Length: 340
Ligand code: NAP
Ligand code: GDD
Image 1 (cartoon, protein in one colour):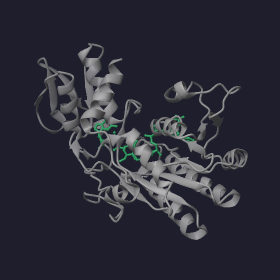
Image 2: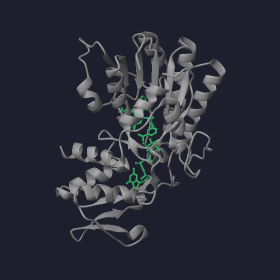
Image 3: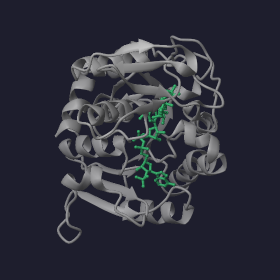
Image 4: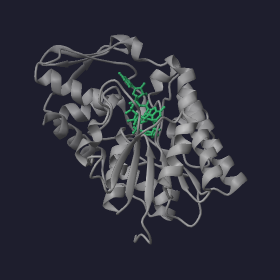
């Protein structure tokens, strides 16, 4: 797809997994990319270090301090940068943590989205807006889930994202904004945060194999997820903002595995044969006759989303989106990056 004029993207959440892939994609497409990073006491830009341009010489990639809970700063940046597209990837994105930080999660994920929408409405309603929605919003609704499936959120995180989802629709319908919700199922990569289950499993197994760690403690092994690759999923975000009309789309692979399947697939690739014994809280995986995976009930959530499997038919038809990665190529890439 050819770009007609210089596009300027403003990315909230640029330092996260998806922000790092989206920045690369947009730079490749000739965008000027502005990313918003939070002030932190230690550096939080490691995922984008290799595309960072020195502030004195930057031409295409710029970083700014900001925070979605600070409406004044959003107002300032949108006025200054005059973006053509805004991607809101900023979030307290950990479901389990949202039970401990429910108020903060709502403020960042729901109110933060509202603040961006208000600024777009007031400063330049022509800015195209992407909202990072999630399959967690389907929660207890049985699979397969698509755009018509009822929402049944099961965590403060999911409730906050559902609020952002409806705010985005409401601003689209009330003020004619080009605003889209991507309803993305789980997506992983070598850039995935270390406390999400896929990265925790891969890093844990590699550490155990290399004798740097004795055991890996996990929670619910039987939750089912539809895991894709972040690189494929940020492409879908961009496609959503290039259409004639703004709409909401489910993005998923349509294939589901349990957490235990993910462990077994990863262990097999690492040539670590596992034997499972015991049940429920006493279930353990043995490697070379030693227990290396055990259950710790602290990783169970007060309410769980048991089964996610998306149907991305609409995105495949209208956006012509399709994932390039499979679960096998995803795990291979995560293992390779971890072993470097
Ligand atoms: P992530 O790695 O946790 O990144 C979240 C980003 O948001 C980080 O850059 C973080 O900054 C930033 N952030 C957090 N609070 C902020 C605030 N108050 N103001 C500004 N920035 C803030 O998440 P991800 O996996 O890339 O996911 C991107 C988005 O998609 C999130 O909104 C997530 O909820 C949503 N989503 C993710 C998935 C998935 O499977 N990955 C699926 C569906 C939806 P720091 O680096 O400083 O922490
Ligand atoms: N994190 C974690 N840690 N999860 C575990 C563990 C563990 O030790 N043991 C089992 N699990 C189970 C969780 O209970 C959940 O059912 C599943 O593994 C996946 O957990 P996460 O990797 O933390 O992801 P998530 O599905 O809760 O949320 C992710 O995907 C959502 C999209 O559906 C996040 O990226 C969300 O931001 C995103 O919206």
